Length: 123
Image (tube, rainbow, N blue to C red; front, side):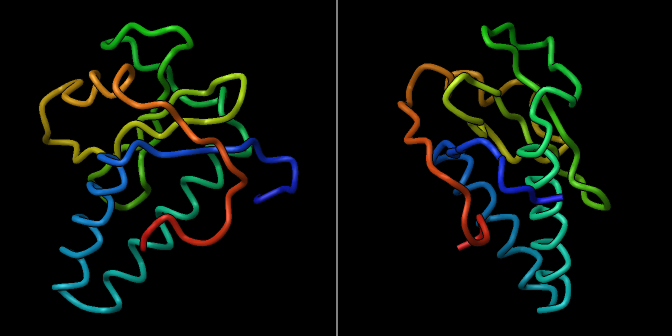
């Protein structure tokens, strides 16, 4: 896990905000809760970047290339992402209870700045 051949990646700014909001909620509960959540996100992103096309396709939002999804183990969040030729674009860190596809407009309103992954996505 976490091989050196991982593709470049980026996350939509709204996705980054969603992740920060979720992390802050866990931090309000306890530092341990926040740390466990951050670790689970890190593991999920590592799996995604190691094997971006191996995760379930999300057919509710048609796109080319297709959108995939990966659950964050132990938490009610799903990472929606799009493997592209130049890297992986994370579109949303969505709570399972949120409206289906609320993030679909993010496909067209952002130009990704793909980069190698370094450090935690939680700022």
